[in-house]
Length: 136
Image (cartoon, rainbow, N blue to C red; front, side, top):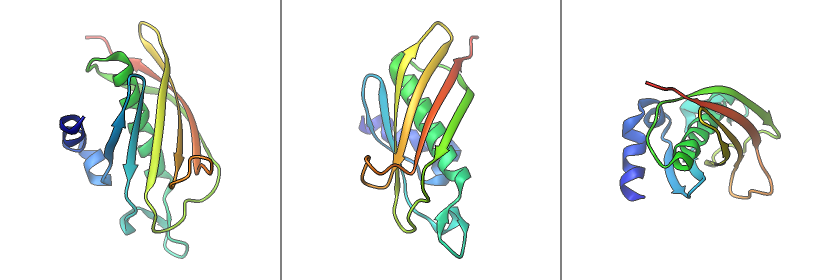
């Protein structure tokens, strides 16, 4: 896990730019943290992180869950990612995304995710997505 976590940010420059950290992986799931940063704020008056940064956190976490479920590195593409923003993220606190890949077919993977700020019972966003394995 430590080796994978180090590579996580380095392998994908966008993950690195957002400060995404892989903190846990299981057989079908992944947990990724995005630290709060002023450059990610969408509204300077409220200090709330921009929705695009949250979307990227969810997409990266879901993709990681797909790869752990497949138990192999593969090229994947996001086909569909529905996100329900349930409440604004509180300024100054990191965001944690947890995604589970609950079904994989030959080419398609199905994932669900939640984003929270320390209490999974109070999610900031929920998501459902489908990812496609890109064949060579």
